[in-house]
Image 1 (cartoon, one colour):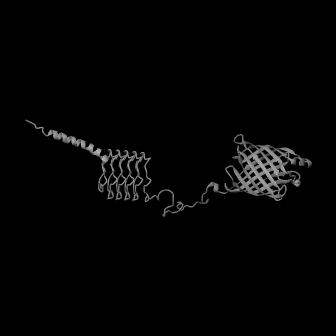
Image 2: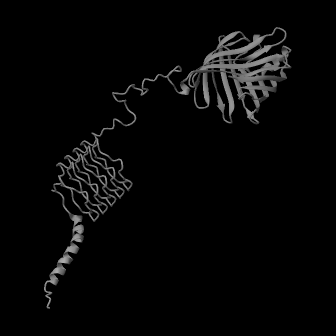
Length: 421
């Protein structure tokens, strides 16, 4: 039996063409022109665009028709799309039901141009929940992209945009119609039960809460209440205040009370307005009364913490008779442990003119110094102490005291307590 083989070359050539045609199609996609393409009813659910699409031109592509049923759920765009041009693409039609949930865009899209893309149509039902955009989109241009359509129902809940999008340009993107009224902050909605979102629940017996620094408070501090054994007198210094951290009224008194003979009390008391001047310094201004010379005065001062935690105060008193008094003081707390504290302090007093009736001379008159060892108990609110005090006259006051047969220098053991509440 004789077999004819004259058709074999033709069959082989046909098979070769069929085998090479997919590769040719994939290669030719890089220069495809979609400028006039109508995609109103197309199904892209199984479309494979994983090839080289770097030169594809969509600049004139018209998608203004009804694309509400288009399915991109299985579309693979993982190839090279770095030079794709969408600058003139028109998507103003109905794309409310487009499904991109499985769309893979993980390829190189770094050069894609969306600058003139029109997406002003209805996109309220578009689903991007599974869209993968993890590729390189660093050079994508959205500067002229129009997204003024209805996008209220678009779903991006599962969209993966983990790729490089550092150079994406959205400078001209129009999102003016997007509804962000449900985001946190801003004005409450019209149907809110209360403007402050309290749902009608009252603040209760304590009223509306406020910042701690805005609450008016009060306090009392007794820095010294002790007995001087050699002088046989009680020394005292106390301060009470009411107000906030920025404004207070302060009542302050200091002096001594004799415990023998006529039991005379010498004190200097003031009522002043207190206000912070800086982080470490506070100012005071008010009125004062001095029982030692029975005279009232205007008072102004500054108190605070000097470097190395030295508590410093300076107060000036202008009496009604023109006398000016200046009191300077400094105190330091040297903490030995959690309870034991050593407190050295010093004070100076000066006057602007002589007043022989009250034993006052011009210039610095006296200096007082004391060292106390305190033990703090009850959360440091109560601290008994023992110490030594020293007092000396200065300048012309020393000579005047000698003429009046008074001691120029004196020292004494002291014991007392300091507390605050």
